[in-house]
Image (cartoon, rainbow, N blue to C red; front, side, top):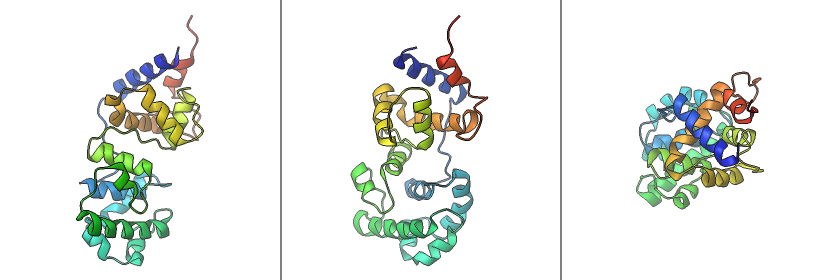
Length: 208
C-alpha cells in the first residue's frame, strides 16, 4: 500500500467502527470543555470526568472561577496530576476571559493560545469540538499510531499534525482525530500487546 492508500484505509475502517463519536470529556459548553481539556494534560479523561463535577458545581463560568483562590481550585482538583500548576492556570485563564473577552471563550487559535495553560492541542480541541472549526489536535496516542501506520516520520506532535492535515481531507479532521484516539485506546494501547490491533495488520500484511 502507498501512504495515500493506507490513509484511505484508516479512514474507511475507523468510520466502520466509530460512525458516531463524541468528546470523551464531560462538558456542557465551550468554557467547561476548555477547562476539562486543560485539566486532561498527563491525566486520563476518566480521572478528569471524576473530578470536574465537583469543580463545575462551584465554578462553571469564568466569573465564578476567577473569584476562587488558587488553593480552593487546587483542593477541588487535587486528585489530578500537576494540580498546583493547573489550579494557577485555571485561575489565570478565568481572569483573562473575564477581563479581556467579556467571559466568552474566544474562537481563534491566537486568542485561545494566549490564555494561561492553553497550548496548541487544547486550542485545537476547543476550536474543533466546541466551535466546529477544522482542526486536527494531535496527542501522544495519535502521534504513536500515525508513526505505527507509517503515515508520518514526525519527531513530535507538531510535525505529525502537519502530516495528518496533508494526508486527510479537511472535512474529516474534527471526527477523525477522535476516531484515532478511540481506536488506540480500544485496540492498540501503548502498553498493550496489540493483539487486537487488526488495522495495523491490515495495512502491512502481504497480499497472497
